[in-house]
Image (tube, rainbow, N blue to C red; front, side):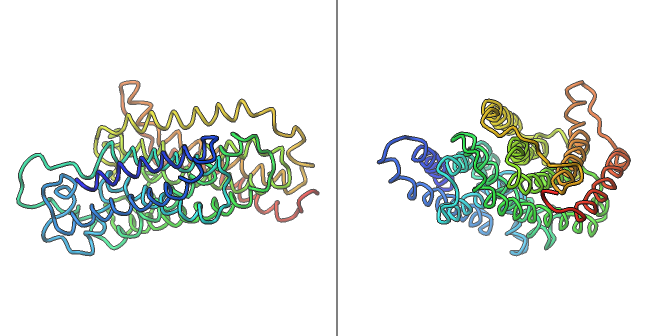
Length: 403
């Protein structure tokens, strides 16, 4: 299928972009712009191919059979594009590739940082190819199954794209962090750009969580506005860590000694996106979540990718620890820096508690007795932290930086 060919070209172009930045040869730079634009164009063309198959209701393709049908209204055929995991990965790739063009034109990322961003694009393309939406339908059928009635809702056209914009944008501070570590850059001149993109990512993720909650409230079968469902939490945890990152970037601009901790937050924010994707698409949550995808063969691929990204990033941060300033992270307890760091710590604890809860099906499955925690666990454990965080926010307004 031509859609698969476009995906293969996307992968090749993304890898070419990585090489053009990584190789120490002058001629390699000539391939940068073509590689970035070809990757984005091919990702777009692949998406157009899938959308065309859905609107034509081409039952020769398994993805179309699973999520479209002749009588499905056209407005919901758009939603069918990202209703399944294959299509949602392609949507993620498309957004990531579009952002890569913006980043290339802005010229705000270092060569090393942009190379990392394109490497992430290559990984996303591999995910799409590993579970392609262009696989043929094995059995001959007259029509597709159509979209789940619960997903035939206008919010289905809004919620997933917003979430995936947040996911794609969180790769930017991650890439800038690794780029700085690779080049041993301890300056703070790149932090404002990182903060801008982190804030946009945080805003999109927050909006996606809010829209998802409203949608769940509208569809009573999904447990109301917020049910602490593991899939809901898989977006909440990166959002919280992105909030931690925003606090730390602000302080790191004033106190460079905070850079190592800030880098750690950037690494975890994106790694948790990949982890949440693994958790929701591994099939482990089938008995514990009303939102999860069914069991499939991409779970192990996501697990390996997540482990490689996290371990590799933490190793790089560890070997670069000695390049950072060793001064105090805050001038005094009665200072805004201290209260900002305290707020970041409280948010981190909150994210860790929710992470543990949403991971319980995985942990208990490894022990042979799959189980999940109930909503009471989350409420009782996070409420005290939320109160302390609110108090710290109030106190922070009473002090200036450097006091």
